[in-house]
Image (cartoon, rainbow, N blue to C red):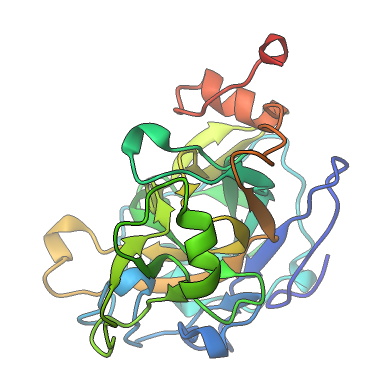
Length: 314
C-alpha cells in the first residue's frame, strides 16, 4: 500500500484499476481549478473555508463535533498497520476522537458509452456504472463505519473533463439547431468547455448545452460488496454523455453540515480523484455495453437502481 496522500493504482484482477485518494492533515484544501488538480487532490485541514466543485459555494467552516457519533468495526475486515496511516486528522476527530484517516477509491471504473442525443429518451448510461468506496480507519488501523455522524452527511459530486484533465467539459458550446445525428461532427470543430459562466463570452450562433447528463451527485450507501464485505459506497448508475470523445470523470467527496447547522456551517471538500479515461462512441461504432459485473449485481440485489445486463441480452 502506498503512503497516505499518494495515488494508489492497482489491478483488481479484472483489468480495472483503482484510483485512490487519502486524507492527510498536512494537505490543505484541494485546488478546484483544472490547472492545479492532481490525479487525486487530498483534503484534510482544520478551520478552512472551501470552494466546492460544480458551482457550490462554501459560506463558513464546519463547527464542533457531533458527540453522538459511534464507530462500528466492519466484521472480518483486514486491519491496516497504523504505521502506514497518516497522522490523526483533526477534521475527522471532530466526529469521533478515535477516527484517524480515510481512503477514497474508485472500485469500478467506467469503460465506455454510446453518445446520446438531446432527448431524455435517448440517454445511454456509462458502462459499467462508476462505484466509489470510502473506507474509514480508527487509530488502531481498524476499518470502521460511522453511521450516526460522518458518513451520514456525505455526498460525491462529479464533473466531466478531457483526457488530459486540462479542460472541464460538463457543459459545452455548440452551434444552434444541431440535431443529434450531426452533433458529433459539429462538436469536433466547435466544442468548447464552459466552466465559468461569470466570464463566458458567448459567441453568436452558439448555445450552451449540457454534455454530461444524469445525476451528478450520489449520497453514501452502507451496503455489502460482491464478497459480502460491508462498506460505504457511492454509485453513479445513470451518467450519460452527449458528445463522442475520450474523457475522464472527476469525483469530489463533500461533507455536508447537518440540517440544523446548515445556515452557519460550510460544506467541506474532503478530496477529489479522477477516473481512468473512457471512450464515448458514435451510434455506428459503439461496440455494446459491458456485461454487468459481480459488484453491480450485488448492489442491485440490495435495492440500488443499477441497470443489469444479462448474458441472454447479447
